[in-house]
Image (cartoon, rainbow, N blue to C red; front, side, top):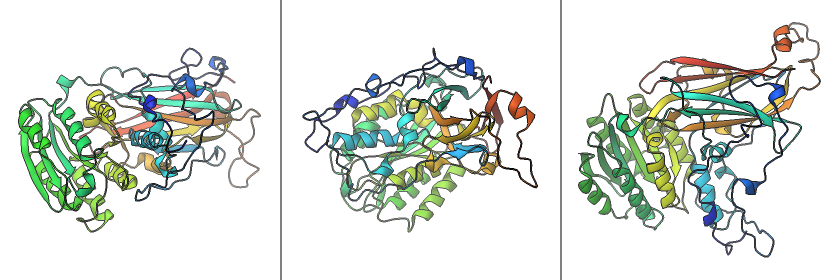
Length: 468
């Protein structure tokens, strides 16, 4: 694929309801049995997404240098032997910025930088049509297992969480502050002009009980619009339309002013959130990244969350913006076109703005009698230690209204029923009778807090079985 290749408009996907494993060929729910496992052929890529254009029957790939852009470094998860590491723990991640950012590189005719591809975000971009939770539960839990499509000798364990979708009329009132970068680097059409179009969409969704203020930053920060009721739409839209780019970037002073405005209009029973829109080029302001992260974390603990929207190319700071959103208990999205803006602010309005569960953690204990080894697909920068699962102070991911989370484990079955380890002197090397007789491949547990709570409210457990 070269820079002269056809623009891939056909991969513009807002929502696609495709189960990762066909429901009619696997079991779904709490009990997974070997008898219910059916052999299924691996799907071709074209069965899910339209094919990629080729030039003269070939594809030329060019790795983008992404000069000026910064991405995190991580190593893909490797297989873990259950005999040595029977427990896997990680934080959920509902962000999908990686998908739209990767799409941007492909549309420009380049392969993305390795650090731009976070597999869990590519998976979580889509809607898998999980059932809504019953009663007052914040999310439903869905598990299924089938043949691994890229290695027929292995299994693929699929875990899905579906957040409760709250009707717009029932959502709590919102106190929102738009924090908009209007520095010189934001003058391009895919930056500030797109920011303005995106926020206009959000303003149209506001209700009379909602409030919004607008803070901008460049050479200095300023309050463009004091906190205004959501039914004053013309006044809010006029303030957005008047924004122009120019000056250097002082992100630190701008974010302090945004938090000040949010604090002054704090809603005790509402949703208090700063939404930062930028290309990430923070070059003045707070003296260090650690100081900025500490500020955001402290405001998070006061009940003011931070969501981050990334725009543009050239000097895009992906790693920094993902970190800031994580510290602020907010979402991180990359807006590459108007359709993505509509997806974030219209189709997924509730999930973008309203948290229904925070610090959500998942832990799986695998049974060595049935599972030889496993690897979690993606979530490399969301991995937790085993003891972090029960640590109420350990920060984890948030789940928004209507949002879903999908996690996949590739499993190497223990078809021979191998012993755990060689003979040891001080501990048993034999598996317990329960491990052999239960028929369970493992147990998955979930911990979370309510949005306004400081302690974990519940632990949901689900045993996963295989008939031996």
